Image: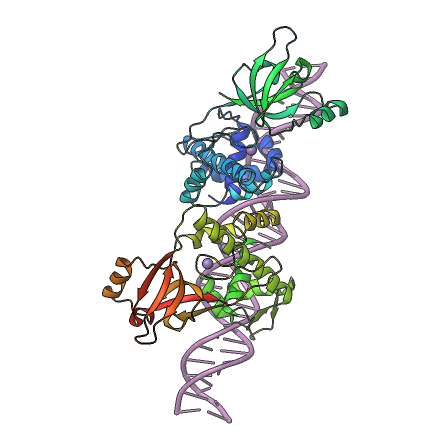
Length: 218
Length: 218
DNA sequence: ACAAATTTTTAGACAAAACTAAAAATTTGT
DNA sequence: ACAAATTTTTAGTTTTGTCTAAAAATTTGT
Ligand SMILES: [Mn+2]
Ligand SMILES: [Mn+2]
Ligand SMILES: [Mn+2]
Ligand SMILES: [Mn+2]
């Protein structure tokens, strides 16, 4: 597959939300930042190659083979993201663009060895699960911190309240996007939470917990 | 620069032996495994861009700017080779093809961080020097082991005698291409050498030393 | 020096991946 | 149901990088 074909496959995969829904030409065009007519051309070619199912005017979905390719690309993308953050000290928000290039490097051995070098990570720096070599992986779901059960870990991926005071609070308490958070205990009385964040144990109010999104893989 | 343009720049650089000799269209075509007519087209384009000096029928050489680009590419290529060997346990003869792809990844930060992660290596797994960020580097020369002065190190890059018995000898004594060898002492009497190879200290005859090539950077 | 051999360039074509403009199909709203 | 709006496809170009065949320039050998 060419670099361009691979990016289309990934786009169709992500738009299909992993469960391989049929997606529209326009949706793909928007995601890829290209024109619908270009998508039609590419989708015809991918159909010829057995990568997608395509019926004129009826949208496009991945074949079994296409899904296999998509999962391999997602695996490569996320492993490289882990590498950039863990080994090269990139921050979680700097990695995407570079991984977007690295995911296209062709070498199965490279990916196997990278996986090993990284200690076979299960999730990427954004909390998204990394498919195994065979294409198996857990689904990730986004939850408010106060809804996360005791004992479960996740990665902080967003805030509900993005007001200045709240963001300032997070900064002061060293809570940042990309941090790994584990719910240790909950207080019945006021709904406050004891959590572990990046190794540290802290106590936060229910109000804070209802404004932080965690990505957890089950 | 596109991937293709970058590969042409590298080819012109390597054919010019680093001292920026003018090279012929045919030579570039052979190196790139393409046709001379394709080279003419590309060289015209690179000339437009100020990357090469080109006069019809008179060959091509890199401009100052082109040399800068070439050195950056060589730096990236060799750093990735070090990464593959040092961090991912590739052997020295498996890295070239993958580095040929990785060298085109666009991110200055990536290369800076990779350099740091690898401990600012001076040479790649083939004994070739790695240009600094500013494009400075030492020249590498190939010498027979018996001509290497005491105290100097190099990387084993080839054999003069490639007969079965000699190769078998090397194998038995665990001397392999890619090994780092330091000359510790020489015996006047018989020309034999005390060397350190991959950490081990051994004693080898003059006959062995006259059949092993070392790449040394000065 | 000059014909022959070789190298290099030109001309014309093609495939990949994109675009614009226009046509066709589908969906939506009343 | 059917006209209008929207989506999607088609047709025709463009750019990049390649190719073949033929023409032009240079180099070589006598
Ligand atoms: Mn990509
Ligand atoms: Mn990610
Ligand atoms: Mn390359
Ligand atoms: Mn090398």
